[in-house]
Length: 282
Ligand code: NAD
Image 1 (cartoon, rainbow, N blue to C red):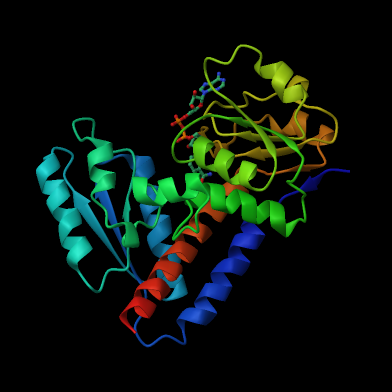
Image 2: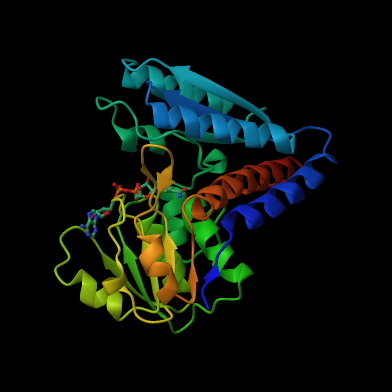
């Protein structure tokens, strides 16, 4: 029997818990989102994040910047948010306009307000296995969902497909720190199907519609589909759910799997940064 890992349900529980915690606070956590350019998907993501923050009771602000903003002006915006005592968490929505140096921009965020955990300070701590102030949202959401269903990570052979800084690399770090044996595959990997067929857990973060088919799957494997691919009417993952799901012990749907978990973790990270900052002031 295949169990669907219901990310939407768990995300809603986390959001409700945060709402209950926030109602007791006199001063509310505040999230600032920088949205540069006019990428339609980014606008939708940012709106969803803002709606969730509002629902919980957080304060939030979106700073829209023109597509042709200079890098210096963008850095100045981040500097202003870093200095603003009322802002607890800063998110720079990716992708950035092509002429902007993403690394420079992300590095400019105060690590204490780095809600995505993308600065080298926070990412470095994660990689070194030190206690982290924040863990990047998507990998954190994947681990939380596995834990919710009591899925054992220790000793498992895990294949992470994709090596991006926001998903592939950090999830591989987290899984190996929990004693999984992790293989990272990418676009230049030669024997992907063979690696996949030998894996207990597959985490796909590629961004290719229905790339993972049933012949990638070992019987009773656990499949986590991070991919978001826009179809005519909806969203679909990297995994061909219809043909893969019957072979799995657990699988995430798209939509309703890792997407909502990512937003819930963003909200949790905002709350945790707020708490950390408040305690620093005491
Ligand atoms: P990215 O484009 O930065 O990286 C894609 C990775 O896939 C690369 O490392 C590349 O080497 C690998 N890849 C490409 N083709 C491949 C192939 N044929 N075989 C093996 N590997 C291949 O992507 P990203 O930012 O990590 O995002 C990946 C997907 O996850 C996208 O669809 C994105 O929209 C989605 N995503 C979803 C969430 C969420 O909340 N659910 C969050 C982040 C990203």
